[in-house]
Length: 171
Ligand code: S3P
Image (cartoon, rainbow, N blue to C red; front, side, top):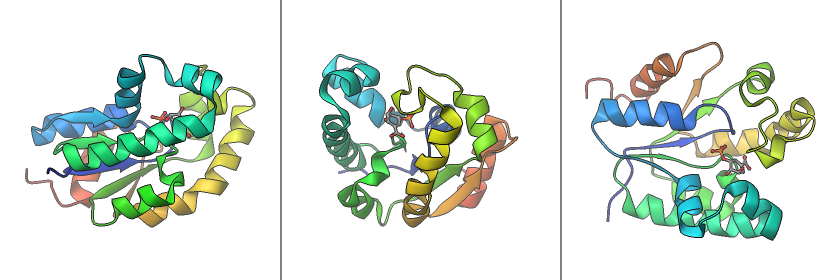
């Protein structure tokens, strides 16, 4: 059984994949992303899964994908933005090195804008973002070992700050 060196959580569009790949390069490990695992296993996009089967079905797939990746991946692992909604998933994250990448609403709108691939922000992104974060902020904070703010920072800066925060900077 392996365990990820770092688990990245945070809202959609915060840069988990970009920062995750930088971290994995820096640490010389693999990179894995539970959204990608689900897309590969299902052979359809996340947007299609939401549309065809609904959010609850997606969350069930996500829960299994996170469990499998936490037990079977020893590199950097990024979770989909809503993975922390599941209580069992939050319990599984206890004891892992979890980095919460945060951003404020203006940064979020700048980065995700009107991205149709993100079904939860497709309509009125600013309002939906606020609502999502009101429901989720405390959950991200609850599972986080450290919080790294990404506002106005490049992915390289964020990766550096994350390594310093979890004290892997000498790797
Ligand atoms: C979601 C985030 C997405 C994806 C799905 C739902 C969410 O992942 O899992 O669209 O509920 O926040 P990213 O955070 O990787 O965009």
